[in-house]
Length: 171
Ligand SMILES: Cc1cc2nc3c(=O)[nH]c(=O)nc-3n(C[C@H](O)[C@H](O)[C@H](O)COP(=O)(O)O)c2cc1C
Image 1 (spheres, rainbow, N blue to C red):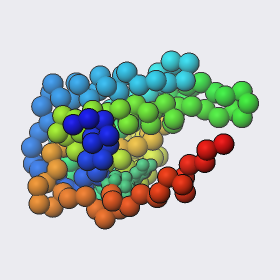
Image 2 (cartoon, rainbow, N blue to C red):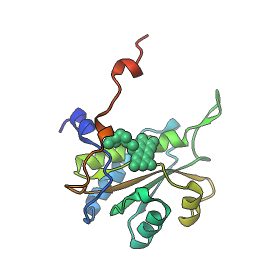
Image 3 (cartoon, rainbow, N blue to C red):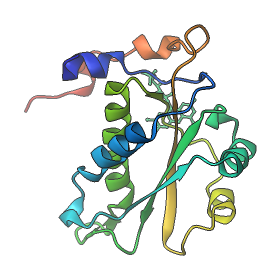
Image 4 (cartoon, helix red, strand yellow):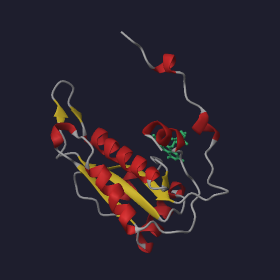
């Protein structure tokens, strides 16, 4: 699968098989995230791998969008470690964490692991339940696993993308 095919084939999986992800694959996914670029290379991302029965139970109680997946990446950023743009005071932690998460999502797909980017959760509850450090912000959850062959199919949204001329302007 070349990169374009990988990008085309990736879709949000919302129903997973009851099958664990192999540890080598988890490590490779995390390594791909490690290679992501971040502002000034400050690397403010913090990834919590929710893999234990206890952690998974907790996250599935917090949101239905963890989809009972066998593993959930909780992707956070340390806002005090991230770069701030002096022109607009914008902190880059969320952008940095998003690039890391994108690397992980696409690496996972190459390894045959499906996922879903999830922002629908109570961030304060996540901070409390997982004891995040003071400056850590949770940005997204990424349930991961082997998509259920029958029920884990792409939603109709997967095939709906705006034409380039609606989102791109050549100047
Ligand atoms: C920032 C962001 C937040 C999202 N939050 C959720 C979510 O909370 N729950 C969910 O089921 N999907 C969520 N998604 C997945 C999108 O709905 C999905 O990517 C989009 O509909 C396109 O479908 P596809 O990923 O299958 O191509 C989110 C995606 C992004 C990028």
